[in-house]
Length: 111
Image (cartoon, rainbow, N blue to C red; front, side):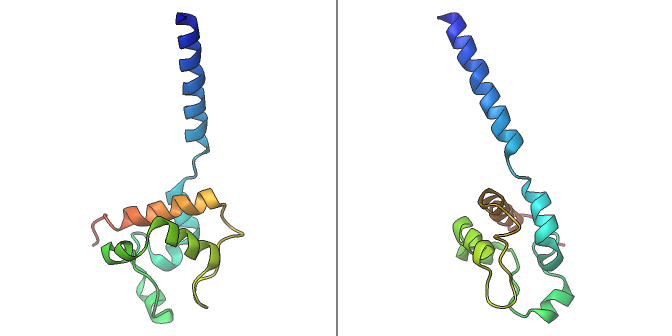
């Protein structure tokens, strides 16, 4: 019985480790796909605000109106003419990771 429990623990630990190793790097994905327009901390640079008047700032107000699922939908479908779809650049798991990261940005202090 003890050997079986130890074996089960090792298998479970291996599965958890493998799942963690396969988890998308949300910050790296954000940096590669979103940072240029939405800024490092979710505040678009002045040039982007001038070019795209409706560009989102990822702050508490944005997060109050947008669930992780709704952000994934925006990433998948795009939004209007200004924000293109990322469905060919990111997997659904990567989009969900980025959406979670966007939610984290709302809690970070802004300069």
